[in-house]
Length: 340
Ligand code: NAP
Figure 1 (cartoon, rainbow, N blue to C red):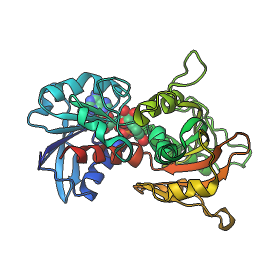
Figure 2 (cartoon, protein in one colour):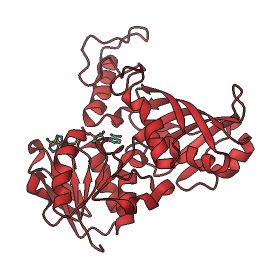
Figure 3 (cartoon, rainbow, N blue to C red):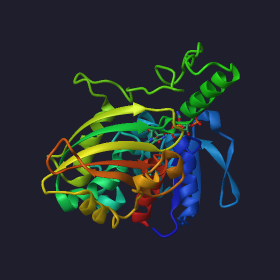
């Protein structure tokens, strides 16, 4: 495959737009481009390498001649349409959770398990955004010190939910400012559309649906997907996922327990050599990774490294990554790069 015909399913979405930008920015050798979305978007145009490309309505016949199909339109669309793409001869790189835990589908972060991509049978899955970002720091530490378990809390941006959620945070913030309310009168009367509660000026400990265990599905992805990506079936993760009023980039606070002794200095030495990761860790000078700074960057960043005071062989740290990039579009394009 040298000049593949690439299709983006969900091209108009928060992730789809970033996929297009990543293909362009990374000089991906696109031979032909097909942009697909719902009937609502048919006829609209998106620019790629200075040329306008029309958006077509996704149908089962959309994949004739397509070599690589990047799917980013939700799990239901992936389940319904990925088989059509595979039948037409395309390799699907899927951003949804539809196939991630399927034993026949590789789940890939190229910096960690690129070789797994070779075993695909037509579909390769892209991991959950918080999981991918967390593993960018955790996996190098695991290789050096052997991770046993983590306790983590996420601070997830609204763009992780998609275009409508970005608009919800923006419109709620504008409504509050327009009404010139006092700081302690921040609860708006307009009901939320996307989230179960107001997201502006709030923190929602509710990402994805709740399970009988009390955890949400999103919270269990770090353990389940982490085991598969790291080839580490005994890995354990207790996670609380929180949606915060940040537009872009997820932040994750992690306390990790390792087999071997670890210090902030020995961890830093490992993390400084890790691909796709920057170490920003100078708290005395107020330097640590921040969502606003990491937004739009390919590399994730780690900081606040310290020996965890509540466990043996423990390290506490803070990882930030642009979840539209490493958590979605960039990782998908990196997987596509493995195919050409
Ligand atoms: P989004 O902004 O809401 O975009 C959804 C996309 O899907 C739009 O292009 C939309 O097209 C398209 N779509 C919706 N219904 C469709 C249909 N019936 N037929 C064809 N296309 C349809 O959502 P997003 O944030 O980009 O997320 C997309 C997927 O990526 C989801 O599976 C999500 O879980 C996954 N993901 C997202 C992130 C993130 O950070 N946002 C990270 C990792 C994974 P229209 O514009 O025509 O409606």
